[in-house]
Image (cartoon, rainbow, N blue to C red):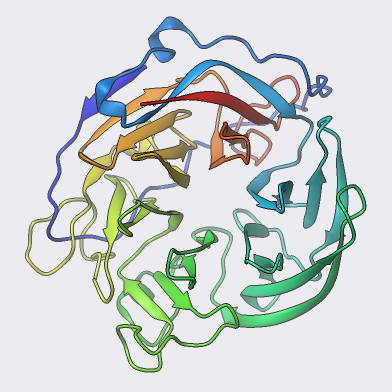
Length: 377
């Protein structure tokens, strides 16, 4: 475990987060290991606790709860059953208690090129599944009914909520999540169109806020617009603290990745600035990291701690909400690239590796979902 403090400024700045990950030649994946096989113990440097890490601390040895996945991107729980998106295959997988998986359906028309494909998932209070993916005509947001019982779930017909969002082989964003206000938030990258992030007529380079049916909430910051915040490069993590404070992770280009506090109508600066700028014109991140240490993707909040999955940095990062200028890292390089992180119904922390996404070095059983106990203060 390593605790750090990085430059912070709560008021003003930027938009983005990173150049997106080291490119390496990917050898063939090794055969999956049984789902019950323990993962090697964290090294002493990554297994400790820290008062700066917040109120929840990873403890003990992570266990593999699923193996042999193909570029998994997001995991959500529907009535306690885990559902996993695979970026390149376009499949939604149901994960059984014994670690086996079965496809409940394929998302129609997924165009998996580069970073595009089947990306973020969310579930509403009615058990409907929301899916963000890249199609042949751009990124889109769809909703599906899910039928059947655990072990025999199936996807219903697709209902299009939003389509025609600019897409590319990189910077597609893709994280979706329901906020404490019951609204659906959608993180969208600039798709390589840098100027679109500052264009309020474009949905690229934005965080959107919409009703569960895809409508514009009356209290959105811009009239008749889904845009909630702008000036983003490639946001990929969304989470809320107990008091409703919204956080987002973001990939920068060459200089700084970011953790931002998101407020309605704020401009986070991309492409004019990257990282803390203190110009007075943009909202600055509360923490920033060099791209080699981060590439922050999925994020979740548990008991005063923000847990952030990091791709290029190959760490789990814990940020205390009480002081988001600090962070503690765990499992440095032990599991490779980490794409997503979430709290399971049993209170454990789940990590989703991403070593088969074309930029990692797959190890035995990759890609995996790992589960670790949390100590709560």
